[in-house]
Length: 142
Image (cartoon, rainbow, N blue to C red; front, side, top):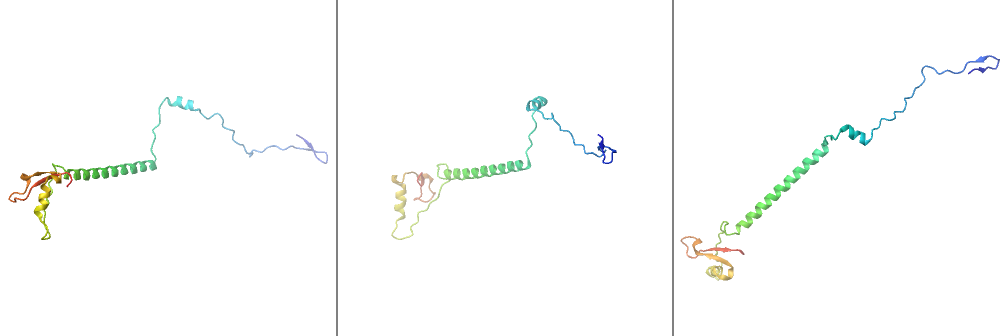
């Protein structure tokens, strides 16, 4: 493009220099669809790796479950021991009837325990050998 100057001479038009900025073109068509990705993978599934936080939470839950199991086992052991103590096969409880006052008759108390009102089964052979007043008593209430 040629322009005329004020004094009649012709003026050159502007030409772009070699240092002109060149912007990159838009990258289009690079996105894949979900179906294309699945076809490419051919049914293979990638391994899902746990993050450090997930691993830590997993370990924490394991510790909590283990503590709960130990607590439950101890509780069950105590309950079975308590139930076994009152049973026929459990160890005997030795009870001594001692009168602490002159007005109380210890023989009357043992007579009440031997009676049918106590609700137990009396075994004379389970008593202490050599003592005539001792006896064995199996009772659910005592």
